[in-house]
Length: 629
Image 1 (cartoon, rainbow, N blue to C red):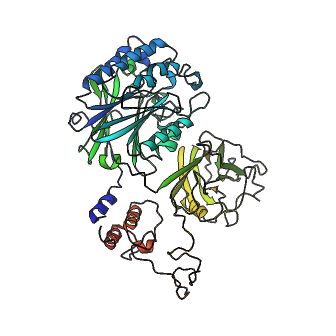
Image 2: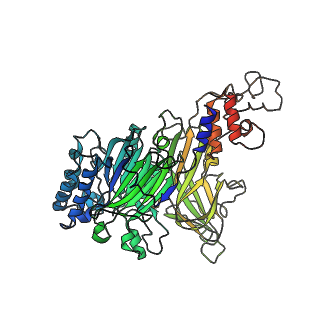
Image 3: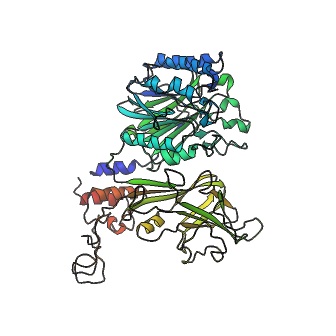
């Protein structure tokens, strides 16, 4: 690794900016750019003979401009029709979408209105499968297949553009657990392809309960009448965030902005940039114009990929009305993201040793979460079946009674499939809880004693004491002034203790103030989740050459069989990972530390200039120690 590559890698950690109002129209015609078109909900075109022409206008424009715009893919965001049991509506959309057959790769997916009975998954997708199932696409080499198993609600496609090979996932409305598992399998089959994911209901444009627009973002609720599915937030946590291949998510369905008495002509748009578990940007976009005049007429999204047009490259998004031949130019309709295509679209080799496991009640068969509330006001009452817990110094209000929460994930450490091995190097661990009522937050203490969901305030002898007996005296993390939505807590220190042999009793979350904090439990709609990123150990024995043996080599257990003195061995300068030599792995570890990643590093060895800090100067000196390869 050269000095130049080190400096470039460290500098690449800055997040890509989101550019409001940036236009793609001037540069999209460049020969090396390409376009993805997103077709929002067409349900009100399908159920009305007069409005049907807008759907025809959309697909005619795509077919006529496929070459000029270099359209690489078209993604329909669901709700193909308004009433899934009406074949007349399917006939209309069949004819409209047929314009794209043999012209450009495209996908459809079922929205809630595409089921025979809206919002009832069990009513079936017979008409959807007849018109837009696998048989429609089987003859195209870009069509990957459907799933899970022999179902046809979900599909994937493979396409190429700009010298890159892409994967597209088209997932059903509120994807089920088995659908997310299928999607993960597809991603694993194509690990070197950057992926775009489209699903019907993912991102919202406002607070569905009314009031102000304080709560746009990923959906945190399930609308399927039997609760059979995952919300947008759950799709993010279970599929998008842990899979760095996915760089973009497209969705429709929502127009919650109307609940705030907003101008109907502004509803159905929202976008945000989120950081996945690997620290990379994911571009999330909502487009749904069905509640606007003329049901949006024929508005669609043009997503233009423009090499060299930004810093250094750019994804420009514009909203185009094919019927009126005009663009919307407000900041929610025209915007852009700057990024480096080569860096973001180049997927890591599958030989990367880093692994990531998530533990969440009901996900992938995991059933090991325990949680409960200890309430001073009800000292003999157990709360193991409660759907939420409260953390507060005044519960109920106007009292001095405290409320504490206990959370534990069993089976995290072990040698079985899906467990973190005892000899692993833990890079990070995050506890994510769904805050349902904002408040002062809590201090997270590692518990030191056994407990069960039947425990009470009284059985703990007056609640948890953070004194080194019930729980650690010092909190391992704090969640302060929490807001509604996902709350992430760094619990890396705890998981490292468990990997090192300490028993896993979970955490006690103790109140930081008198504004009560409520979050969902394993029995609630959004169970707590523990995510651990780690590097598996080598499984070596205790008599290793690095000085951690048992002393059988004639020494005192410090490794070199020396005089048994009390002074520890001096670290090897530059040996940031403590493996006994200085190589590119040490350079990489130091780089990651400088980029503010949470890594396990020998600070003394990595601090080459002995100034008490590890910075880019130390990284360059470590490179020199390796010979500047």
